[in-house]
Length: 304
Image 1: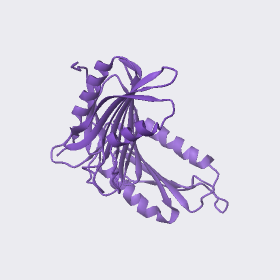
Image 2: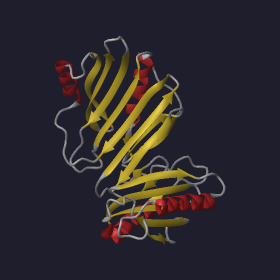
Image 3: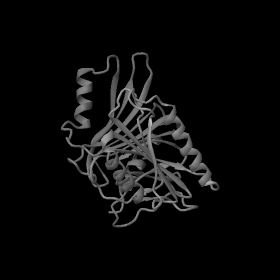
């Protein structure tokens, strides 16, 4: 067995954290209580200027959007919440002229290190409700301090962890994480993805059964599948299923595929549906197995 050793960075996966090789690049999204959440890192100086410029750019984009036919402007209103962060602004608008009854909220809460975007949409008549829910999230956001790469995981604190910061609120409803990592030095084509979703319906067919069915039915014409490893595997206290296989196309091209999935429990943020996968070139199998095992074994519940 090849031992995997390299510098890693801790990333939030909602109510979990995971260690990812430091050289890999991050992209992806977080969602909590139906609001999309995105962090922006400010330069070390000039956070106010960057916040102001970023907000002005949003408002300019909204104003340039055509309003619905019976409206004079796409921007309904701007608001400022002086008690949240160093600076917190929100806008309620029409962004789709074809949907005059739909309103969009955008909120930017800023600290000296980070900006937090919170956005969603709903009925335009639900403006005050969306303000209330968005500001709840903004008030609970814990950004990293200056010189701190990311916030610490607090013991006995049930928080939703992001790329850098955390929202210190318990689960209420609808949480989702979809993040990707690329550009590992062992394989520049390698893609590692981590998805987490609180589900209302639990999938009854596991990864191993689905792989067997794919082989039996030749689900992908012309693709030969060579199983490398299939097994039950406990990750972070959740008994999921793991499959690793080689896919070989008719022209001889091949790739490696790694997957682990836990189906989740209904409406549970501590036991959500989690899917972790790697797609890679067909080489350096031992090293990639070691990388895969290290990533999976690093995932753990956050604060509990």
